[in-house]
Amino acid sequence: MFGYIRPLECELKVREQAEYRGLYCGLCKSIGRRYGQLERLTLSYDCAFLALVLLAVTGGAKFSAGNCGPRVYRGKRPIAQPSLELDYAADVNVLLAWYKAADDAADEKSASAAVSRLALLRAYRKAAGAHPSLDEAIGRSMASLRVVEAEGVASTDEPSDAFGRLLADVVLHAPMLPQSERAAAEWMFYNLGKWVYLVDAWDDRESDAKRGGYNPFLLSQMTCERAAFLLNITKNEAEKGYDLLSLSAPNGLLDNIMRLGLTHTQKRVLAGQEGCDAQTAPQKDKGDKE
Picture 1: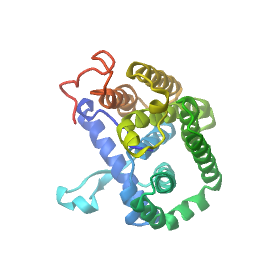
Picture 2 (picture 1 turned 45 degrees about the vertical axis):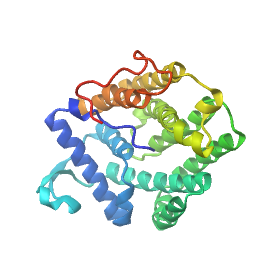
Picture 3 (picture 1 turned 120 degrees about the vertical axis):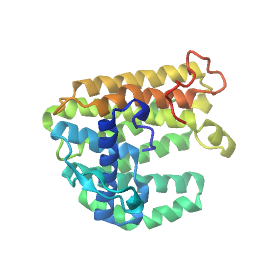
């Protein structure tokens, strides 16, 4: 995952902001506890979101005062206590970080990605050993994506479908996900995966054009208006899945991410792109942050 699934912080209440930061810190500590300090550098906003969703349907996180190691000077703050949900998100974080490093090393012939892949190998093997079926599912989706890229498919449907299935598998393999929530969670994460792939591909058009990398938007010569249309469809479908989840309590933080955060990210990525008019990619709101 790529860090696109995050809240619009200027619209969060103080309590919600503290909850998000506490959950993020809790996930970071879980990665460190399970894999080591180096692996904490792979911490992802998207996996914090995964933990938030799982906790929201299983009863919510518990918080206690604690310190952030690198920022101990800030004093104690609420940090999410260890839980099965955070541990699962930590395992997913490591698996996705390793697969991304492997993919970047293969696609971009990046030395830094190759080093990252090697550095994460021990942690990857541990996470894959804990979740072999999930590792197999992620590997299958990544293999499908590589085939699409190698063939130069000039369509957004096939690559975004592969990544959508990857995220759907991530949530479906969560052992604590209630059976009653599986259908809604699968649809939500499948469409979030499609949206993440599409917004990342649009965001990378310039760099992909320079290095000759695969990008379905470039190959299909898609207009900004059409790209915005596709992004809106997948985002709206993800919201439909979210609306069907049975949350343990009203969750303003999740509402912010799904209804404001995704829209803000999409608007930021589209803004300033050639061919995007003011209606498709509106100007930044006064409260928006860079």
